[in-house]
Length: 93
Image (cartoon, rainbow, N blue to C red; front, side, top):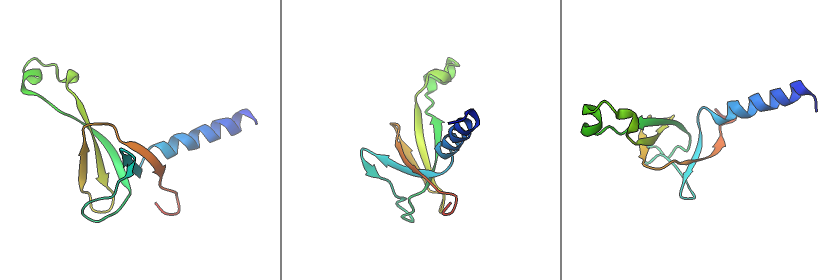
């Protein structure tokens, strides 16, 4: 396999790992509790505490994973990392 073909495959894999996708938590595929859609956009939020904010050390606070339904925009919060189990194809996205 040529160098440029490997670069192209690497870029395609990177593109599939970002953007909306399918997710699971504890082995169960997730669906939106509002509209039952299964495609989410992943995000991360800082869980600030007053003590760390006063010490200006918010970088040490914990983070939560959020999943936003791409159909109705309902946001799910997770204290642990969720598993990405699939990407949205170009034809169905």
